[in-house]
Image 1 (cartoon, rainbow, N blue to C red):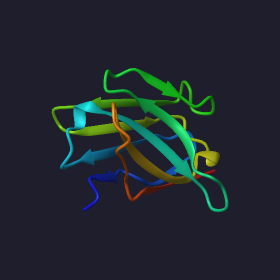
Image 2 (cartoon, rainbow, N blue to C red):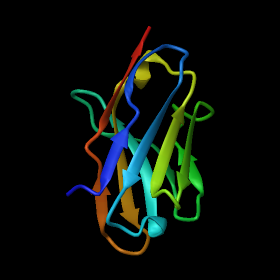
Image 3 (cartoon, rainbow, N blue to C red):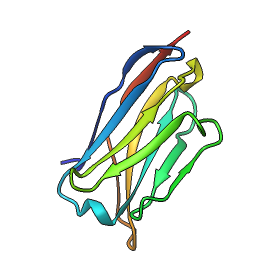
Image 4 (cartoon, helix red, strand yellow):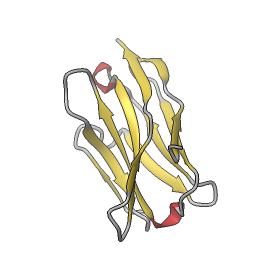
Amino acid sequence: QVPLVESGGGLVQAGGSLRLSCAASGIIFSIYHMGWYRQTPGKQRELVGTITSGSSTNYADSVKGRFTISRDNAKNTVYLQMNSLKSEDTAVYYCHAQHSYDRVHYWGQGTQVTVSS
């Protein structure tokens, strides 16, 4: 059973907003660094941003100032708030969990985000 489940994807117009959620189960969520990645057909998966177990964040230049990652350890959930969406943000978005002091990591199944221009 995949311990990460994304939700919140969909179709949105350019300039709009979406919030993705990634719910974790079966892991000690608070000790995992969490990340969001995205992938379009024919391209490699790319990093969108990360949030450490201590809630420090880091973002790809392409989304800085538009996207925000947050986490709620009480709900075992990480969020990706996406504002001012552009057509080039269209991709499948994946959640990733990296154990903070081990090599264990997990991927979610992905959720499609489509931004229409």
